[in-house]
Length: 82
View (cartoon, rainbow, N blue to C red):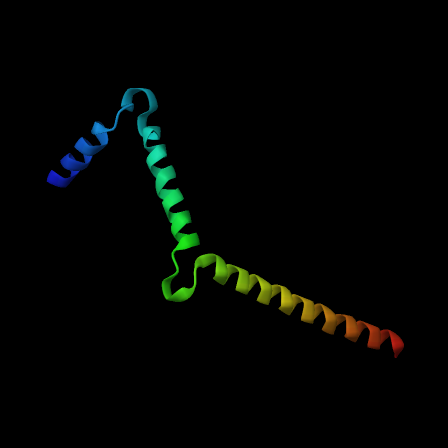
């Protein structure tokens, strides 16, 4: 019960409750999202960040689809010759 009262007091301390209601918290969420995005770009645990991993997987997926396309093309061309 004490924690709920404390949480309510903290939320009530943020101005704009009558006008915006819960939407007054949007700037806080925006800043948290920006911090997460910044950390995904600049934080490099073990030398790799999120975007390096994404780019590597995307290139791998494109290469696999290209190989599959070429294999399918060869099968179709061989089928037409027979």
